[in-house]
Amino acid sequence: MSRFRYPGEFEYQDSVMITWPKNVFSAKGYNVYQVFNEIVMHLIEHVKIIINCSTLEGLNKCKQSLTEADINYSDIEFTSYPDDLNWARDYGADIMINKDQLQAIDFQFNTYGLEEVDSSCNQKNQLFALKHAKGLKCHNVLKSKLVTEGGNKEFNGSGIMMSIVDTEKTKRNPNYSLSTIESIYKYLFNLKKIIWIKKGSYEDEDFFDGVLYYEDQTPVYRSLSANGHIDEMCRFVSENKILLAEVDFSPTNEAEKITKQRLEEAHSLLSKERNHNDALFEIVRMPVPLPFSIEIDEEDEIYQIWEFYKNKSGMKVMRDRTPFPDKKFRVQPAMSYCNFLISNGVVLGQKYYKEGMSLAIKDQDDKAKKVLEGIFPDRKVITINSTALNILGGGIHCVTKNVAKRV
Image (cartoon, rainbow, N blue to C red; front, side):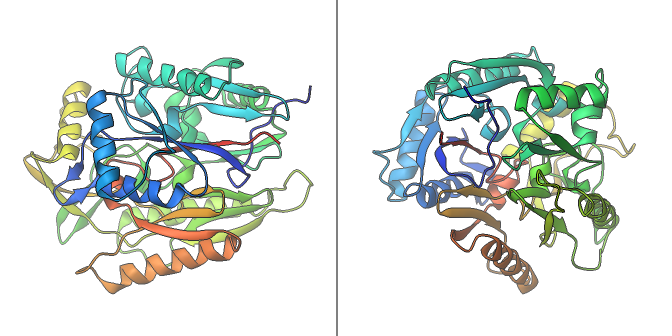
């Protein structure tokens, strides 16, 4: 029997899991179900879709939403695994393949460092991966004590993985050395090497770190974040090609300056890395979205999540020593053009422009779409306004989990 490998996302897929959210609106005027409807609408002709609704009420809401969007869901498989979150990418089954079988890797999960691994929420999410694997008729499971999320691991399908050091080592597994973490990953995923990028985008740091930037002297905060995921800024788009974000405009605030520096350091590192054939990787740059913020208050889901974790943390001030915002404040959604989903014959990307915004945002959206079209000439590139979803801290890639077909 041949050894298992973790395939690249650009390989042919058997299915895509989607975890349907419980609430319709992340903030006033931002309908999350609309984003999910579009994801399903554009995937349904290309790949088998599995939608998880953790309750009967959630299932009924999901089917109602799909019906109102005129989407025939008769070929969709619905599951009901307990799930307190909706980020399939991070705690869905990590499935490896060979020509004969599937093998799942079962990791620990701690809600991005916000809760202990043995909390009820995290226990549900760890069982989610096992139930997802079982539903795929994968009964071969390797267990690991490492805490990690799928959104911080990128694979080229030929034995190379990319990840962020700060997240895997400092934030998730501080009791392990980096060399130990690397050895474990190489064993579990049958890897030849791991490319370690030092840090992710500054905008993707912990949302309680403090003020992100000031907008006309008004503080702007992160809405939510995965707290350092590679799929927000760097992706394998083929065995030999890496897509890396780029701040391609003059930074207007300190956050953009920090992100620009981190991305250029990543570019310097990646430009020297070699693939499985000992050739240099081709690197393509992807612009970052132009920033904008929204105002939230006590009626918004995102505000309530903030309050829940603030109270749970016991923190009196934010990590930059500034006071917590109160009643009403501005947040920047977790925006990224790199958080796209690759599937059979289609790529689903993100866009942000809506009527009334600066046309420069639309121009940036169009520029990002052209980059994807250049990379994937044989796939249809469709971009979806994902702001409602990004407010909750992730994007299209984060709420989906693809499983490759055995070949």
